[in-house]
Image 1 (cartoon, rainbow, N blue to C red):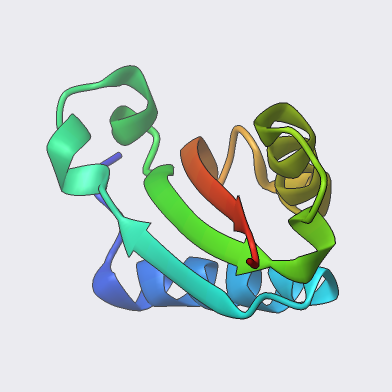
Image 2: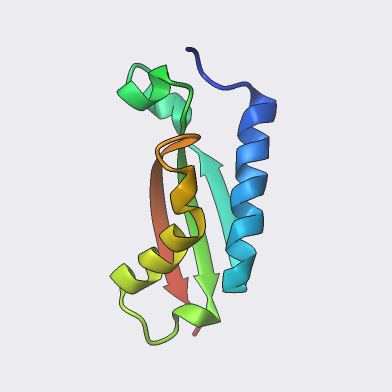
Length: 94
């Protein structure tokens, strides 16, 4: 299978954006990095490699691992397909 089409990627990004709204993000950016992983096993199945940059008051007082778990909890059923890999940058609001 080849790389997913742009519309598929945008649908996946929108789905993740909707799922992460439960965390009340003050900032949220979702970046498709699939093109950086061409030839990788996940890329062969058409799954996406994404980076989530998120800031939320719900992260206040939490260690990075706990912040990541909150993000993963919202999208875990999307892994390993249609998301093959998810890089997370999660920060608390100051």
